[in-house]
Image (tube, rainbow, N blue to C red; front, side, top):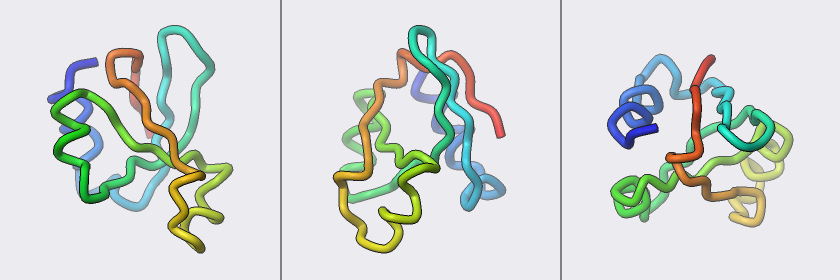
Length: 82
């Protein structure tokens, strides 16, 4: 997917507190939240996205430990849905 398409979907204020299902071209779907940290703009310019999955969200929310977060390449995204 293109950066602009992902950005438009992710930065929608109505989706700020909800999990998004991310469908990939070559792997299983995941459900997670896009994380905005200090390097968000730099990663976005490279079509890279920091995501915490629903399985690890509570641990990440409690600790803010980036071990629970993964970076995905937006070119491997096939579809985003609520």
